[in-house]
Length: 512
Image (cartoon, rainbow, N blue to C red; front, side, top):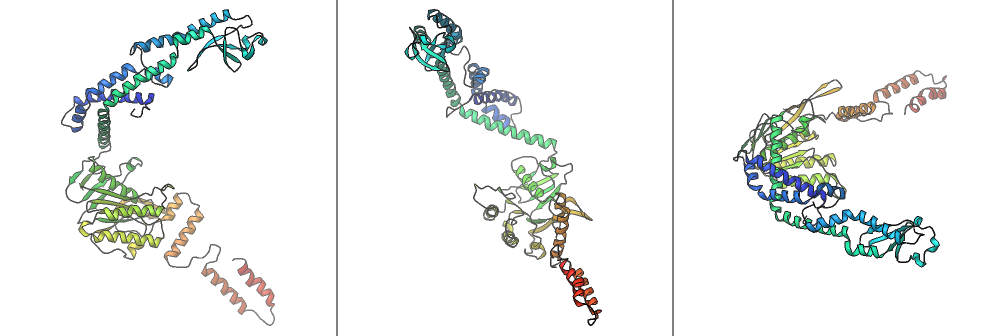
């Protein structure tokens, strides 16, 4: 409205807003005023809303506005406007009557005519070519006695006559006049609305706040959230925590605890197979802490949470060509924010940082980041890190510190099948079981089998042979057989060329 671009839909939305806001005020007024949001709505939703509702209701003709796709004023608002509309509604009848009178005055070779109105041009007498019996009787430039030719279009000749000029002088551009008058009324109504813009904006803010509180309350009741204990201690202690979204998307959600304090360590390094629930656990901790800070109940059995000033995350890289940054550069920027600004009351969530670059470089930067937080001592923030860099733990790349605790999510391996238990325990894992996840994703079985073979060879520090190369044992046995045949060969009597062609050459040429 400030830019004079309010559409019919905008006016409808405004009317619904202020109409329902007045009803909302009446509901809140009879409720307990000790509740801050009810008291605030009762005080802020003034009679100005009712006044705006009445103005819009009495002025705007919404059904007609929707049909004409413009602002239309109701009857009874402006007497002069109503008079114009009555004239405009009678125009078809008047124009038909004038057309009949004009046809009676015209020459006999004109058998058909009509009166039409064109905005900004006025009223014209239209004679179709089919209504002229003899075109040769038309004068120069389609002239007809008593008429002034204006233009022709689509085989219709348009003229001015004394009668159409009288219509122009008496009625004028009635349609344009109506539109101009309704636009002027719209601007006056718009000014009244803008005078109360502060009340309207406050109404929107409070309605949104109430909507949010009602949503949180409904979820707390329906999904059995608990009231967290907010403490001045720098701790995050959650018993039976759940992810508020993920638990709605699966049949059974396994809750897990969180212990982040001076006794149980403030840095948690989480390892585990792919798809075992590491990212879900990290996100649920951040969400529970955030919900507690804004005053919501939380999805847990019990929660003691200290005040948290910031939550830093390195969870997801939003890639876009418009950013002009690589995936790893985006990750580094997120980590940089956490490392430079996280304090002892901050929470840092780091999910698989370093995977966007060379493994050695990513591992080195991740270890250095964790060491940086360890070096802060009692000023260390709450940090949860998930990683597949198992070398970091196996080679003891991190310092021994009571601040660091190693956690993993339990799994059971039943032959070739991997069962996820999603239960958090202390310890670490040495395998990511990527091949199990690949098989579940539908990767061809021969590719999965080959991946398991290569992974096992690398784990045992053995050379990896090409798929079409015989393994070492088979090659040794074939070579031994050739040697035995050669030793048993009588060189003086045997055909050496036949021996080589039948034994040695097929053995190697056929298998390489």
